[in-house]
Length: 316
Picture 1: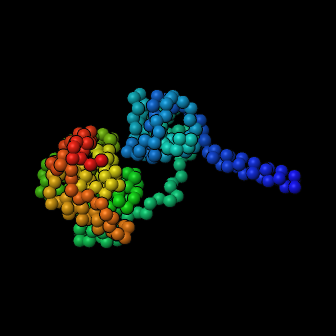
Picture 2 (picture 1 turned 180 degrees about the vertical axis):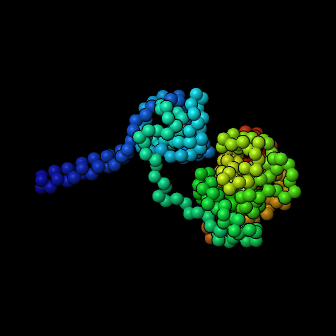
Picture 3 (picture 1 turned 90 degrees about the vertical axis):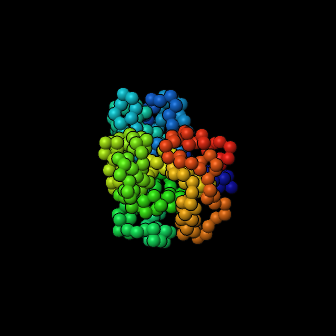
């Protein structure tokens, strides 16, 4: 009896030890942060949510690194590499890790997500939007970059996908290289999101490190059209929470055109997309805008837009 008890205790101890060892990263290396309040993000993008603020400078364990948004820290070269901190459950830019390199030496690349969200296909968008998909071959060409942009923007739920795709099908028919018909302005509408105005071309270009003001046609290139749509959705505005709340009225206001009959058309497309993705249309979808956001909000900064949203009559 005593032997059996001892054997059980020893077995449990081995299992427990194995569990502890299993939580230790296989390739962890110790580095030191250089920031006093370092944002730890859920992914390797500036638009990813901040899940923790790490005081410091302090020592951290890093098990892998992945490429994401470019970050420039004063006195250092720009880096697109982000370190994964397993103890903190997220990523920190290598720009604030103590190293002279832009990529951490001796740290492996992070493996790809083993269960990525399913990509959107041409058949999917045709089923959602029908005749609005006017040039299927062109849409097909752009879908790989568009799916990547959706992954980068955490557009990974049925509601978010429906809002994003319904918006783009009305903006550009999901054609990455479209130019707004009849718009001859230097900074007129281009690309998936129909980027418009120097007040958008300038910040988007700075974010990606490209000269959109000097070469606005880049906004409708296969390389940049989808990333720019992601930038607008998550950086110029923060639209995913509106999709989560089924508030297509707020989504439309964030895109930046005056309220009108177009709002209902986009909301109908949103419903069609949700029906296709989930099998039904949920109750509680909001198609109209709050009073404060019924005008043309296109030239507002993110802070100005969010301030209007907080006014009486706003939602959220």
